[in-house]
Image (cartoon, rainbow, N blue to C red; front, top):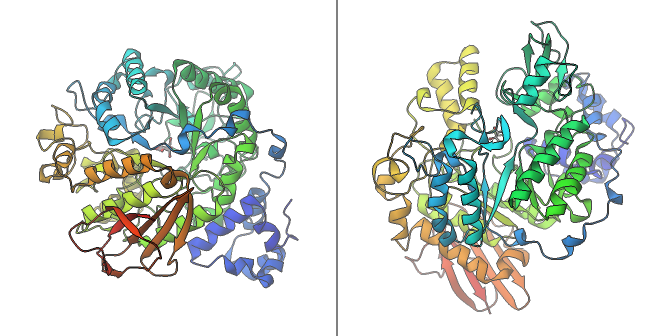
Length: 634
Ligand code: GLC
């Protein structure tokens, strides 16, 4: 139990304390050594409060203690390891590929991607070397948040096809020796889900307590919690004369996981899909499911630091581990299913609490700390410095004892190559450099559709071209705050998720071969300049060809997936080098993280070049801008 009499050393030694402090330090650009030095280690929180004085509000330290102690009663250590964990699980060597169906491939000419389209492209995925597909939500949904607002967990979204299509898809995946995982969105449901409708209609009935409702007058939300999609996290429901909690859009109502009937329903629906034969789940914002009892007000200082008020009450709630262990024991374990949790705000130590095998919770998590530079947020306009990615990767590869999920792109972020090189001057080299790092470090790589083609950010011309609720809400909020429309649009453009949600570029033809009809969202058109799967497949120097070769290399040499990692030349700016080794096999990877030539690092051994992102020049002496190479070492 952490109290105001505890020292900084005490805080640092707990998983939550470690990760919360590490996050705050990183955001402030302060090295971790500042906390671990003997003087600061001995500092008591009460002394820190005196030093902080009026810079933080009165609620700050109580809020911090609440968060630090949220897991004080965690009894996980006594949970025995599931016996199947002794065999190396399949996902440790797998390459995953995320499909955001709406923009992947249209098969029925309505401008919207669908399951038929995914089936059509299964051979493409097999040829790329993909082992497993993660399907973003395909369930029935009113699409307020494009499928992340589920109305029926056991039905397919009409625009995507039918359950028969799904069964054909699953069979097609398995026939090709691949696996399929689904997206499990159970922090919330759509307000159109029958559970929510029943909760509104009959507060005393069986579903009355499925969600978080609070009293309060219609003009005053019950607390200051804010939503991730702008505005308050509360919506008033006259039917119940109460407010309902929604951390995301006002149509995504948070489920009450403290109610055992909710947990029964979730275990049932997971089992239903596993009985069908799916191989696992990606679990949406899964660390938010447990909330502090009573949903206390959020601290304003914490809210300002993080950008969302109330977050300390659910980032890592009191029953999180308990719920995850229960769900694993009831649903995932009996089917041998794999899980990867989406866990924003979870650092190295908390990640271990969630994923080490003897904990019996999840298999992997997605950590997001590398996506933006310290002190920056997604909607800030800035150029990413890959030396920060290097620092992040070294920390996780060295410190984290679980299996890392390696990724850059997903459906929630602009395209990574544009973050690093907004001008696009080094698009091809950079795409290859990022590929090498992702596919030769220890962990499980997750590619996002189009990444393997070097797809970049879009040149959206006006707010009318955007579709995502987060972007549209933010734009409205900025205008309400008095920001000029052009400035508001520029801000939204820097971070909009729509950059990742334009149609996959299959051919140089109309609509990039995605559809015969006008797509539901349009891209900039660079598919006609060679950035498409058809042209790239025919070009040995393309990004797609590089991905294929790289994935094949990884498959051929287990050392690249599961071998040990040793970094070399660590202190050299812009330089990333590492040795991977397993048994007799040894590999060396070196990368120039900058747009300027860089001197190579001398490493002893006889090198046989396997792959390089830039074959046009001699490999001796210097590394070209963003050049990355992999060698076998004899
Ligand atoms: C996750 C999803 C995101 C969605 C949100 C709410 O972050 O990845 O797309 O909007 O959860 O479900």
